View 1: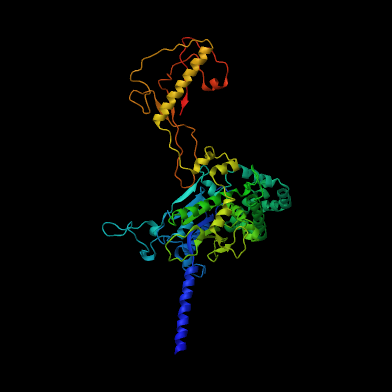
View 2: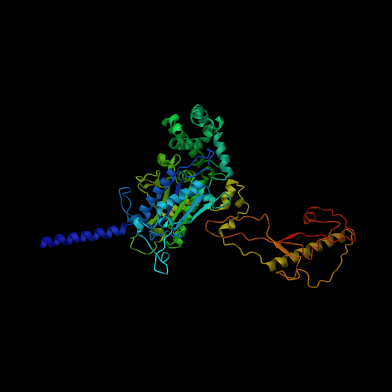
Length: 572
């Protein structure tokens, strides 16, 4: 009997110890960052507008559903055996999409934005289930008469997507190589380099045969070459799925070779971290990865600053170049994994999870020293594709979980710290580069008040008039000026009075566009130009002396004694 009790006691102790150990080693995911490649879409070389195809939409929907299973629901299934409560994002809403928790960014093109929408349909599907059964209801659905209101398409959820165009400084996060002049030049340098020319010569016959099989009448024969390997492969892959005649004329081996060449070109022009542009070591060809790295770090830091309340999920949608570039910067290609030596497939996902090892029952946000980062890559849209982990920065496969402080330090060595740095590195002529400056990441300074502007304007005007008088006196020229007693008219302060009919404030037509850090919401201060005030009467004058002539010329034309005073243009 004693032995039985002892056995039961030891078994109980073992069970308690196992449960405690499991709680100690369980993970809590605090933030997830994912860059997703857009889905199957109409190629650029076709005359139709580029839009997401139905297949592409379905694929992105499947990817969003896989994300939901892992990060929102955490339900184990046959699709992904790794799906478990350990991967649930801490306190992420399960049913109702919260725009503060899930931030979505995409490029401006339709096929990219539509890919984001299709993904979100799977990630946060309609709330109302089959047979009008309500999966979730809050006070926004309840009406005063006691009934429940519903929105179209079974309570379809409308995500907030930040779509950045080429004139938006935030576009560099989604497509850092876009509108980057030095990246374009470096790409041309590769094309004309011995390496590029060697591949060009070796593949000339292959691309010539492809023109006869698939491109005749679509583009010029000279266009079908290694220099356009990525566009050629994209067109062939699209046609192989959607065009029966092309599928019959192009063999599977030709399709595969075209893809291999496109992957080789993509890695050479986006994954070569040894190439430099204007500055030695600027890694110009991997510029898209350097801008992406900055947003990754900012997203994780925002989650830490808000104690996990914001930036729980950060989702980006764009082309394959940022993934190729970031993978090269993170030394993933050196792991001899073929996934990182070329373009990811449409719908592929690059994922970074920030987590801690504390129990999910612990409500407190961990210290930064207790946070880790894990890299995951899904190079397929198949529902059977797993969330495969890879070591970062050349670490051993046994060190998949990277301490956040080490991750932050490594990423800090490759990221671009500001939009101004991107503008300088790229030598870009983008509109937001005209006004970019280091102050873009600092609080905006208060603009000059109208009263201050008026005071400074009066002082400047007085100074200029005195300068004109001194120069005239030195030249022996008498300058006579008519005096008029001022009554109610004139500019008497920082605001326009009733009598100030000749004072106007206008916004400059060619003002500077200040680049903003994503989500800052700051705007550039407007400048004001004062014209037609009482100091500058709009009458004909016999001689006009500009400020530039006063600064740059030694000789000044003589003015007659009866001439009107010069007009001074003043901008504040």
